[in-house]
Amino acid sequence: MVDWSKKKDCSKALMGLGILLAAGAVGISAYNIWDSSRAEAAVEASLEAYEEELTAAEQESEALPVDENSGMTFVEADGLCWIGELEIPSLQLTLPVADPWSYPSLKKAPCRYTGSAEENSLIIAAHNYKRHFGNIGLLPEGATVKFTAVSGDVYEYEVEKVETLNPYAVDEMLSGDWDLTLFTCTYGGRKRVTVRCGLVG
Image 1 (tube, rainbow, N blue to C red):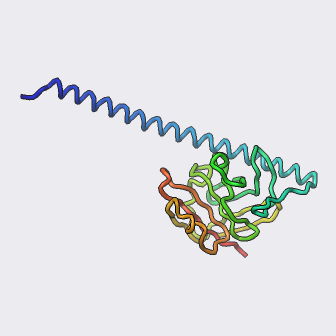
Image 2 (image 1 turned 120 degrees about the vertical axis):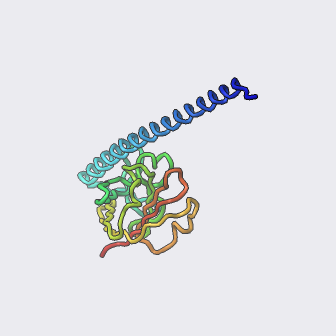
Image 3 (image 1 turned 135 degrees about the horizontal axis):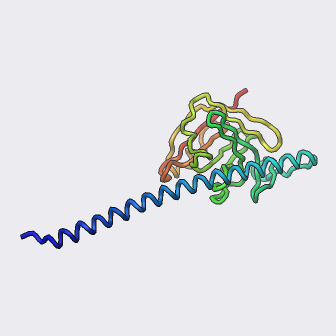
């Protein structure tokens, strides 16, 4: 004989669980939208602060400091040190690049992971926010990427390869004779989308 009261209790429990899961999904989606908007505002504010500080330094003909680890000239603005500006025209992105990298810094903007533009070994990391590196995996071979250092030197690159690496494949990330590497994580952090670039000219 079927115990209908138990079946009703089970149905109610499953319905309640379904509602909780749906609410959780909505909450996660809302958080992701908010975090993406926050990241966009943060990078815009950082870019503005960086450009203002760089302009002020140029007008005052100040001798800018050089980082002893990277050998790159930098300016301080918005609570961080900045080594230059990255442009990816096909993605309509202009981003300041901070140094050194840290998780709090990555919340604001892309960061130098290692290497330097001067030594043709620069690796830049960023979060997968749309306004950061969220779409770099869409870059075709031959796409232009430009880095303008604080020193005023301009480095123009071409995308040569887009690959996906495991999140802990540090040796693979650092390997190869690439002049510029850009990378970000996939959603959930299971992989690293990695763009390899060669210097033009």
